[in-house]
Image 1 (cartoon, rainbow, N blue to C red):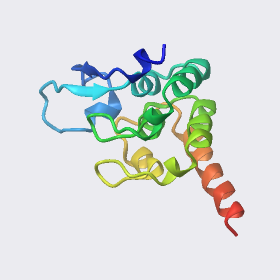
Image 2 (tube, rainbow, N blue to C red; image 1 turned 45 degrees about the horizontal axis):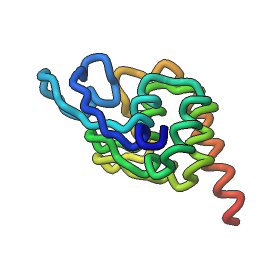
Image 3 (cartoon, one colour; image 1 turned 120 degrees about the vertical axis):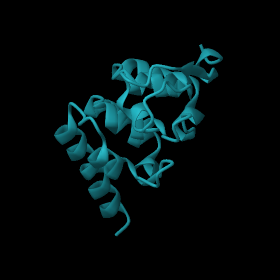
Image 4 (cartoon, one colour; image 1 turned 60 degrees about the horizontal axis):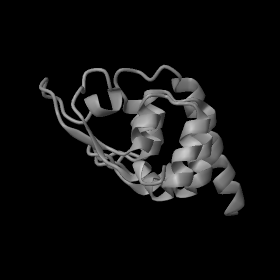
Length: 139
């Protein structure tokens, strides 16, 4: 499925998607381009699917969706399973420092996200543990 993992899709329903909803404050629908990895992160897909999508198209980790967010930002704001977030970070360690279109790293994007992410505390703990682990390896 490596070809399918590289196909950009267009999403129009911004009301049910918190990460896309934050893209623009106007109430109209927007067309936002997403890769399958963005969609999987957004829909809180299981780790097995996220792992397969990254295996098929690892570059997707460093591709911003049409709302200027990387998969890590989308997963954090959507309240993905902490295992998924840990795997995203493991697959691209620099992602915890990656900035979205508003210059937010995933942690600050999570803090500012509206509506509040369903697993905000768990996701925050996962991100903070990743920061801590990376700081220990650099000292």
